[in-house]
Length: 207
Image (cartoon, rainbow, N blue to C red; front, side, top):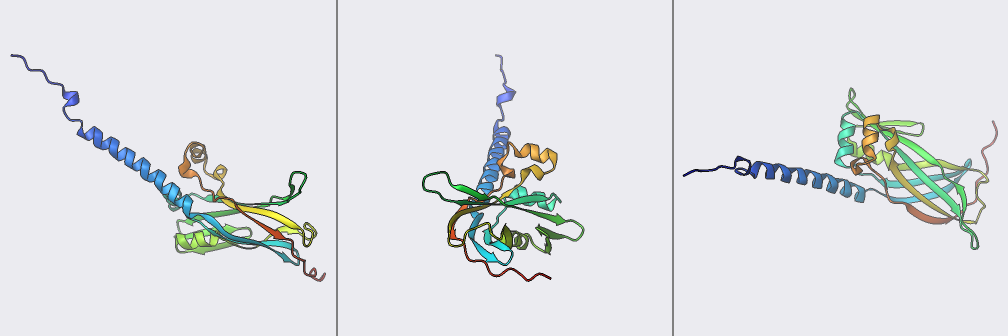
C-alpha cells in the first residue's frame, strides 16, 4: 500500500495566524486614524475688531493618530495650515470672496532637549508633553486676518475655518506615500459661522 502526503496543506495555522494579525493591524490603524479624526474639531471661533483691523480667536481640539504621533517622536516635523475663508453673501449672485488668509504652524520633538516645540506665526513655545503641545497648536489668539477697511461695519459676513496637516512639507518619501495612505492625513471639519462686522476702535497714534 502506498501512502501519499501533502505537506503544503498539513499546517495552515501559521499562515492563518499571520493573515489574521495583518488584518487586525490594518483595522486598528484605520480605526485609530478615524478616532483621532473624530476628536479633532474647531470648537469655537470669533472675529473681533482691533486697532490694526480684524483678528481671529479660536479654540481647536487636536488629536493625532498613532502614525503622526510616532513620526513626531522620531524627529519628523509636522507642518499645519489654518485656513480661513471669508465671504459676503449676495442675494442675486455668487457670494463675494473677501479673503482667504492662511496661518502656517509647525510642531516637532526636539530629540536633544526632549521637549515638543510649537511654532505659530512668530511665536515659539516648548512643552514637556504632547498633550500640552497640541493644546498650544489649537489655541489661536489675536491672529491678524484683515486690515482696517476690509469690512463694512454692520455688514453680514460668512466665515469658515479648518486646521489641516500640510503633507507637502513631509520628507519626500513620506509625502509620496501620504498621497495613497490616510494614515498621514489630518484635517478638522470646516467650522462655519456668520457675523456682523464690528466697529473698529481708533487707530493707534503715530509715533
